[in-house]
Amino acid sequence: MGSLEGKVALITGAARGQGRSHALALAAEGADIVAWDLPRSMSSLTYPLATQEDLDLTAKLVAERGRRCLSLSVDVSDSSQVNAGVERTLDQFGRLDIALANAGIVTIGPLVGVTDEAWDEMVATNLTGVFTTLRAVVPPMLRQRWGRIVVTASMGGRMGIKGQSAYNATKWGVIGLAKSLALEVANDGITVNIVCPCTVRTPMVQPDPDRAVPEESVRQLTRGNPIARPWIEADDVTRAVMYLVQDPGVLTGTIMDVSLGSSARMS
Ligand SMILES: NC(=O)c1ccc[n+]([C@@H]2O[C@H](COP(=O)([O-])OP(=O)(O)OC[C@H]3O[C@@H](n4cnc5c(N)ncnc54)[C@H](O)[C@@H]3O)[C@@H](O)[C@H]2O)c1
Image (tube, rainbow, N blue to C red; front, side):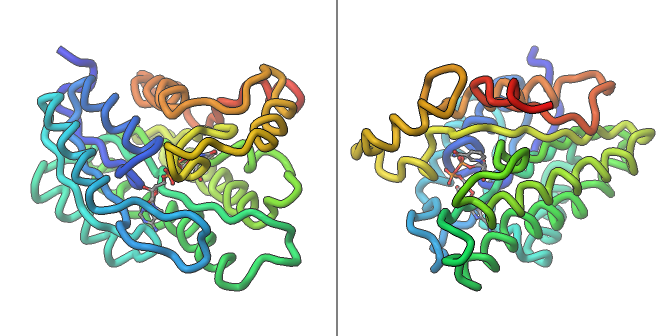
């Protein structure tokens, strides 16, 4: 029997990348899965978001692991969609135990070139989207007096990075949101933790798996990491997430850097 048998886990941005990897690991441990994603484009992005086929594939892979999957098209920046998605979850499963606020987007470039549109879309998804998700999932967890919440920030939320000012602002923001919520629910059986990955090889970084990332980018990424590798894989982050959701309830308000050693340079 898996350690999460009988639990229901919601993952935002679950159609691909880290979100799908987390969904499959949770399912393998026995959790039923609620997979949200936004299968549409955003005008400020230079890479495509997930498709309906991606979301359907996540659901199929969860089912292959013997678990139920409710997959829904939910834009986390829209609180009415988020609230309706949590209601559908409770109607279908009667509970909600784990929530991973993972959905996010990125636009890179110097601050002076960041358009209003790029700023608005990033703040809406990466910051407002985590707020709407946490606000909606906490009430059922309070009723159950048990919950595990993990927010995906980034190493960009731990430091300044040239060319990432807008993205990093959203990621610093969600750390403050999650840590403050952790204090609010500390005695209610709910933990709230944060994972901060360095570069992860997902479609956000390599949109077309058949087209390699340019060698110069790989060299630059590798140079920046104490462990001389350009990136980590989605399942490297999943292991951190699984540790946090399986914790008996003593770890809260914690940031787990998954960073190829970058945190060794920070206090
Ligand atoms: N890939 C990296 O290098 C990296 C590094 C650090 C942190 N992160 C963060 O990790 C998280 C997961 O990213 P990933 O690497 O798996 O990238 P990804 O682009 O493969 O996955 C992100 C998912 O979120 C979905 N999404 C985007 N906007 C949404 C919205 N408004 N509502 C619902 N779903 C939405 C996308 O369709 C996609 O499926 C993000 O928060 C990202 O910022 C990524």
